[in-house]
Image 1 (tube, helix red, strand yellow):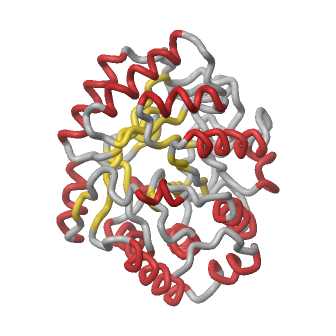
Image 2: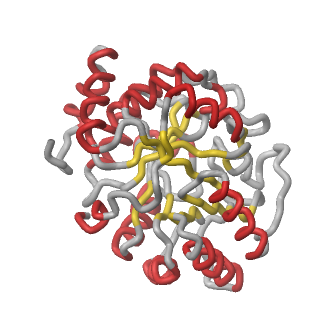
Length: 326
């Protein structure tokens, strides 16, 4: 199957809206053509600086303006982060992601510490990823030189619905950061969240933006909203597994080589529901009790999941030629 960057919204909508069984079958077929179906990458995400963020993302408990139970803490020490990375590696993770609740990266001592963290985690043989907010070209270059493998910067939703969720930065701000990351040689990790009140057209719109970037993201996280008390979206209903399956299968079909990551919301899914997501084309999960500040299944539950479904952890840096092709 050829890799296309010229998908139309209409084409993606037709894929997304086809009968569910046919969609799952197509997603599974494309998945097997480009990936080992029994392999799932295990990633760990650590909040290295929590809370106090000046942004107003309606889903996020780390925004300073919302009254949530998130406790603010400053940037962690380098050694503390490296200890967490070692623990993650020893428990089976092959990608270690560090998230800081910043609006954007600033050129200061905190960024210098993050550079040291990146160097240290990279030295452990892990794929190292950061999500730190907006990034300039020069900052992206520094991270790349330090050994950063991937940078996460989600689009969150469609351009049309975006202003309903966030007003403190624009959609173009997000796209500019993705461009800086791509130009630097770091792999792009970008996806979104469903269940925030968006329409199916908005979901298709977000996928269309991702699939028509100059190069597909190496990694596409699909998140189901976990409503947090104190945020504007605290009363949103639970996302249906069928909606997650549609998103995952569609993402798999239009971005065949990407890692499609079953991300936030997994804690509310049964083993059977997660199995459907893997069948449809998901091939990565986040391990550990928390995803930044939201709950996540624990290590024991995930070990049982892998055993029941006969899944194998995917090694680090597999198919790295995808980056070269991009």
